[in-house]
Image (cartoon, rainbow, N blue to C red; front, top):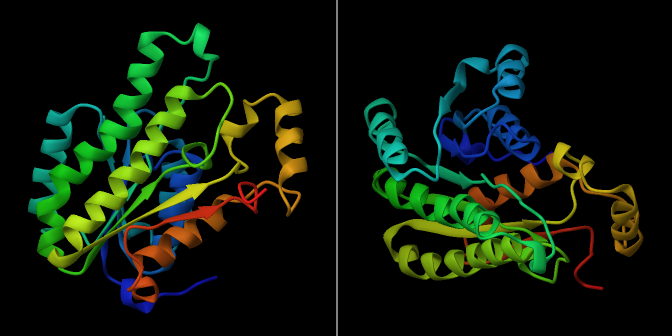
Length: 251
């Protein structure tokens, strides 16, 4: 497990914290001695369990916010400015999917996925920018997907959003690097999670057969990549998207 002493005591904001990857990211930063602000919209069950079980539970702050509603995000930023003053690490992890063939995809399905995944990433980053700049030498890690790197059947909306995050990451990094905010992205492949359990087993088997490692990824493996990109160990990496997919897209 990668340990990054430079992150100890830092304030970390994680959106989409109630999902499996989000929970793993929160767990990782608690392990690293960070103050974690975990943002959820609906379900707190996993976060509540983490709050009870982790030795550093006092460092976990669970906050509700719909990141697709900019007024709620503005209120969250104001609250964090009062309580924490600065955010050293921002993890834009929140996302949803509404999969369907393009011919059957509704305008609402497309709009909702773009609004949460892409516009939500923009809104949170925009409103947290002053807190990131207060921190100095802060980092942003955006969670994209291999669906944003290569074709993903039945996911035109999701692929568009995740591709947009990669472009957003690259240009934001170019603008912010000289201002002390380093921006990168992670593109996970198919990861063992509640989301993947909803995917038909035959599709999962087909994907696994194409992965050189012949297995799905684990949520802690993604959390490790995220922590690396937010630490001084990656201090010369800017504007990149690190693909963590077991080798799937290189095929």
